Image (tube, rainbow, N blue to C red; front, side, top):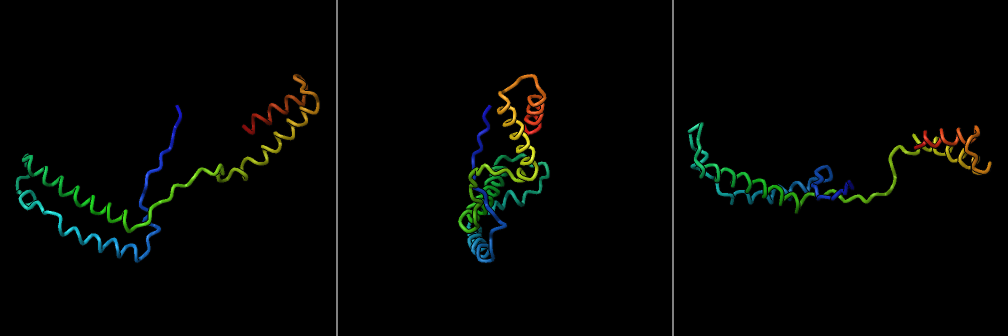
Length: 132
């Protein structure tokens, strides 16, 4: 199965400076317009099963969440979509010497005429297996 990675925009809070945060907070002043579900919040029944209370509290939570997310999307920098560069961190340090050894023995095996059952072929197979 082919695993395809899809980039999703993410807020990069670590990239936000003081101005970004200030603008974010100013935008959140709009939270004053979110309707407070007073009846649901003042309900004293610990086992409240009122569907309307649940709906009001859910809408209230969603309104707050959406306000925070949209303010962040407008004012806070977003993570960039890094393109695949083909560079694997640490590859040179860990694998390059083994690769070069494998290439050396492969070239020597080719120069010998591709023999199947000699010492050079065995070493070539072993170094290739180590590299892979």
